[in-house]
Length: 309
Length: 295
Image (cartoon, rainbow over all chains, first blue to last red; front, side, top):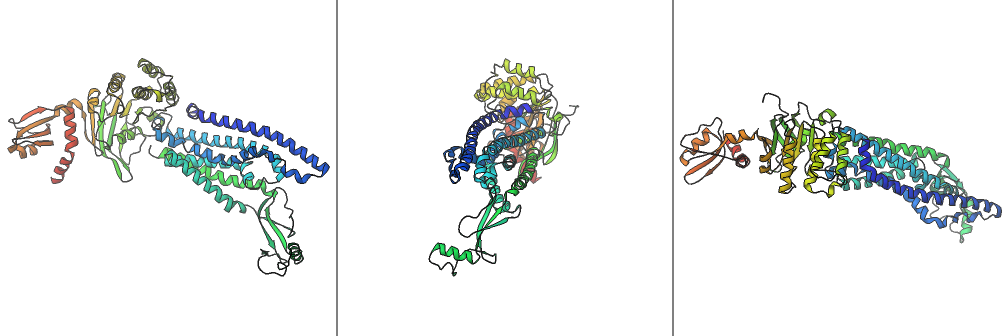
């Protein structure tokens, strides 16, 4: 069976290997350069107090920054590939060849599923490791690894996404048995799940922390936290939007209005998930995708072995 | 035949949703037979062969191949060689890779036989099979099916896409491969002359059930064309099992089964060839149904 798996997937493996190598070279070369530059800049700014200009040091690296962010699409690409596994055989009729040999359809499907799962984890882990390592200095600089695209492409979560997408692709491939519809369904469902989970579930894994600050000027939000929302609160601590007539907002200048509001007890409130929740978040979201992935692999197994060919 | 048949089905059924692909199919094919499976498109030929190799599960009745129920088990799959419709192969693999595929997926694989078979047919082993001719591809697929030394070989329209010469070569090499009589062959086709050339048995499917399952010689011997005067038409229909009827101004011509038939010595009896018999069954099926409901 190992021979058959390798024979069938060696071209895909080679292509993925080449792309992954090119990506690794780009990431390592720029990563080393950017790390050196970051440390030099930090050292320099400590000496001559130019730290406010630090934010711009990676401006020349747009291409690699974009490439690294594009790895957010890796899971869906792997899912689309997995969606061709069974449907492709059925469309070309070669499933009749494979499933009538003495290895049995049961072993065939077990090997396919195991390969898909192992491939998803291996490729996901390799890309995630590269991205996570490369992101060290940007993470340190911007303190944003808990936010959106950074959270989705670093550490454990991207591996779980890859596993889920591949399981989804394989299950839909086995159920639908037509390549293009299987790919379309995989991409559509995966995107929908990702959006729904990140918008409606992710904010609730753990409680938020409110950070208050002056109504004008910057609130000091701790580095590495995820900002969920921002609003104003009145003297009693109730959320308010500073809309409507108010003795302060009637004042002629902005500065005067802000001073008046501050005196009346108004504060700016930033709602965050603190950096200390990061790993808990990574683990919860990873489990949230891994469990359904296991279920989808089981569905794929039964769809291949129990259905008519 | 006293030994139990190599392939046997009893009331075999296959339903896809509301569509009935196989209604009630009962056949028995003895060991060593080369059996043609004929029938119109949609009569259930492909469904029958897929049920016999375990690619499909029956919705009723049962099938036995070498006394085993088709199942996803090594011991069963080893006994069956299957060549699916349109001769599926991995287009980007070479013939050599297909042979290695056979070797890696079957413990019973006979590498020498399969390899020499293709070499003797001058089939390039190192070329992608998608670049080979249809006839060569069919030979690669046949070598793959034969290589695991099956007891039963199931071929679904293996020559449908081939030109007449390639068809003849394929069938000749098939006949040679199974000449020792150890392998039982079931081969579907809509090209009756091809089947007649290589088969000794025939299964005739119509609307998902087997109208005929018999030795071809016996079939030809037991079916005649009887010509009687029109005045005797009613009596002839009563005393013989009639498959089809054609009437001229003076006479009525009947295609009949002559076993148990009472034939008036004044009627003329002519031999029929296999094609005429098959056409009589296929063309006459609706007629016989009417007779059936009337009685």
